Amino acid sequence: MPREGILVRNPYERISKEQVLQIHQAALEILRDPGMMCFNKQAADIFHSSGAEVTSVSPSDRSAWLVKIPEKLVIDALDTAPKTVKLGARNPDNILIMSGEEPRVYFISGSETNIWLDVDFPSYIKKSDPSTEIRVPEFHARRGTVADLCMSAHVCEHLETLDGYIRTVNIQDKDITEDNKDVNKFFASLNNTTKHVMSGLTSLKQLDNVINMAKLIVGGDEELRENPIISFITCLVKSPLQFVDDTTDTFIEICRRGLPIVVSSSPQAGTTAPMKEAGIMAQINAEVLAGITLGQLVNPGTPVLYGSVPVRARLDTLGDSYGSVETSQYNIDCVQMARFYKLPNYSTAGVCDTKTPGIQSSIERLFSQILVTLSGPQYLHCAYGLLDCNSVFCLLQAVIDDAHFQMIKFFLKPPQIDELNIAETLKQTREVVETPQKLYINYIRRIMRSGELSVPYPFEGDGDRDTVFEMAYNRMQEFLAKPVEHIDEAIAKKIFQNIPGLLPRLNVYEERRQ
Image (cartoon, rainbow, N blue to C red; front, top):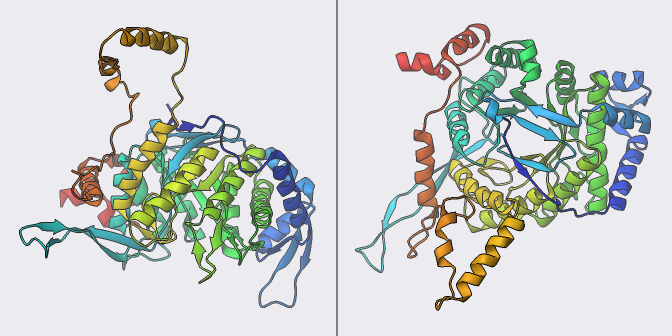
C-alpha cells in the first residue's frame, strides 16, 4: 500500500479564482512577449519545429535564441502532462501516489547543502553556583561527505513523518569528482533508505549510470517504469525567463527516458523577479509552464511536477530571505496555480534564515510549515534540517522538525464527529451532571491508547532548564542505532560490478567482511 500522506480538507487559498485566471493569462502573455531567452540550441530547435517563433539573438558572447511560445503549445502540453504521478520506492509501502486534483500532502526532506552542522554538548560550571554543571550545545560547521549523506538517509528512513527523501548534503570527499558524484550520491541515498529518492544531476554523462543502477535494484526497464524509485529535479530556468544550456540538456534527456521530473523555478522577488506578488507570480508561472511545455514536446506524457521555490530578497544585502512571510505567500499561490492546472505540486516550506537551531529557526520554520501544509501541496519540500537559506544541514534540526510535523499531522486528522460520537457525548453528559464531582475523568482511560489524543512534546524538559537540543540529540542517536534495510547483497554486488565510479567503502557487505 502507498504511503497515506495527509489529505487536507478545504485547503487554504490566498488568491481568488479570478486572480488565478489573471496570473494564468499574464503568464501566457509573458511567454508570447517577451518570451524566453534560450541558451540551449536543442531546446530552441524543439520549440521552432513545434511552431514557436524562434529568432537568433546577436550580438552575444554565446549562442542564444528568443523563443516566443504560443498559447496553444502551452495548453496542449498541459493536456498531455499526467494529472497523477507515481513516485516509487524500494519498499512498496513507501510509494507516493500524487494526484494534482487531490490536496494530499507528503512531507519530503532536502536540499543539497554544502555545509554539515555537527553538534556536541560540552559541560560548563555555573559561575553563580560552582556545584552546578551545565551542558550547552555547540555547533560546528564543516564540508559534507559521503558518510554524512549515508547518515542522513539512515535517520530519515526512521523519521515517522518523512514520506520521501531528497538528498540533504553535497558530498565533497577528496575522491569525489564530477564524473563519480552522481552515482555515489544516488547509491548512498538508495542504500540507506527504502523511501523514494529524488536528486538533481551533476553531470549529464552520469544519467544512464544512475538509471541503470535503479534498474538493477528494481529488476529491469519495465519494472522501473512501473516503480520509479528515483526522480529528478532540474532548475532548467534561470530567472528571469532564461533556459540555461547545461541543465536544459539534462532536462531534455530525462524527459526522453520518461522518468518523473520536477520543473523547478526559484526567482527572487526584488532582483530576478518583480517585488509585488502579482509580478513574481506571473513570472514564476510563466517559467514553470515553459519548462512543462518543453518536457511534453520532448516526450508527451512525461510525469512532471509543477515546482516552486520562490523567495524574497533581503533589502539590506539582496540575499535570499527564506524566512520572510512573503516566501510562504508565494508558495501558497503556486500551490493554487498547480491545482488550477491539475498537476502535482512540488512546494517549499520550513525554510529559515538563521544559521543554527534556536528560537528564530523554530518560528520561521513552523510559520511556513503550518501555512503551506494547509494549502495542500502534494510533494512538500519541508526543509528537514535545513538552515541558513538552505545552505546548511543539521541532523539534529531534522529530528526536531520530525516532532513538529507529528503535531501538524495530528492537527490535520479529520474530526470524529458523527451520530455515534454525539450519542456517546449525550450519554456521558447526563451521567456526569448527576455526580457530585461533575468531571469526565472516568471516560478518559478508554481513549488514552486509541491515538485520539495528542502526545506531549517529545523533548519536554523537567521544567528547570531547556533540554530540547540534548533530548533531540539522544533521539538522533537512537535513530542511528536502528538497522537499515540495505540493498540486497546480490543486487549490490551487481551494482558495483556494472556501475563505474562507486566508492568501494559504500559497499557495506565488503566493509563488514573486512
